[in-house]
Length: 56
Image (cartoon, rainbow, N blue to C red; front, side, top):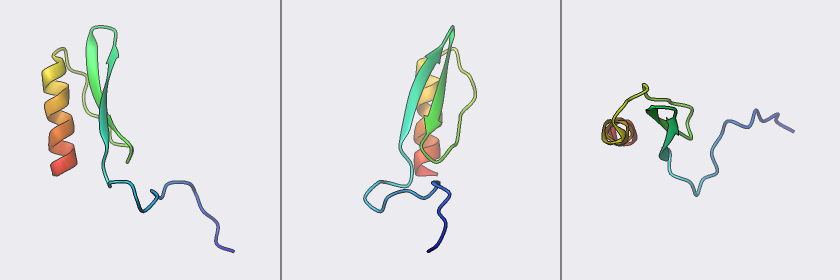
């Protein structure tokens, strides 16, 4: 039996699914693939980072 490391996504999930999280005065974009955007003061910029990641 092959060993799995838990990093593979189930076939029914999209390759990238992003969210944003507030951390103090900053907002950061995160993806299920492990990508993290830079800390931003503007939530709108964090959302833009997430959109660029998901489509890029």
